[in-house]
Amino acid sequence: FIYACAATGEGGSSADGEKAELRRRFGQWHDPVPTLIESVQEHEILRNDVYHMRVPLKAFNRGRTALLGDAAHAMAPTLGQGANMAIEDGVVLAHHAAPDGDPLAALAHYDRDRRPRTNAVVRRAARILRLTSMRSPVTVAARDGLMRAASRSVPGLLLRGFDGIADWRPPTARIGA
Image (tube, rainbow, N blue to C red; front, side, top):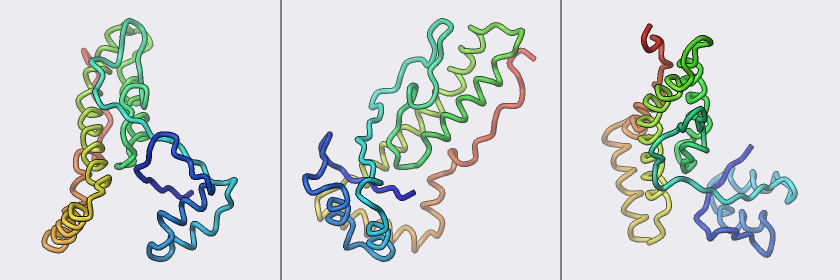
C-alpha cells in the first residue's frame, strides 16, 4: 500500500493517466519514491477526492441514532487518525451501552465523551493540512526551514504533536456505576 496526497481541484484526474500524474508530481523525489511509482500498474492506482468536515457537528446523536467515524467527524488524512477515531468511537459507545441500560442515556454519554476529543483531532488535522498545502515558494521555504530548525534544536518536538492522540485510553468506569 502506497499513499500520496496532493492539492488538486475536485475530480482532477490526469488526461495522461494517474501513473503519469504521480511521476510528474513525485518522480523527482528521493529514493525509493520513483521506484515505488514504477512498481505499480495503472489499473492498481486509485485516485479519490478527500473531503473533511470544516464545521463540527453539534451532536453525534439524535434520538436512538448515533453517528460514528467519518459520518460524525470526517477529517483530513494528515494525521492518519480517521480509522483510529472510528474504532475509539465504537469502544466508547460499547462501553456506555449496557444491555439493561437506557439507550438514550448511553448515546448522550457517548456524545459527551467523544465530541471534545474528535473535534480537537479534526482541528489538528486541519492545521497540518494547511501547513502541508502551502504553495508559495517563499512560505514553503519558510515552513521547511522552521521544521528543520525545530527538529534539530528540540529532538522529538514533532512527535509531541501526537501527544493527546496516540496516548488515548479506553474508558474504564461506567457512568452511574
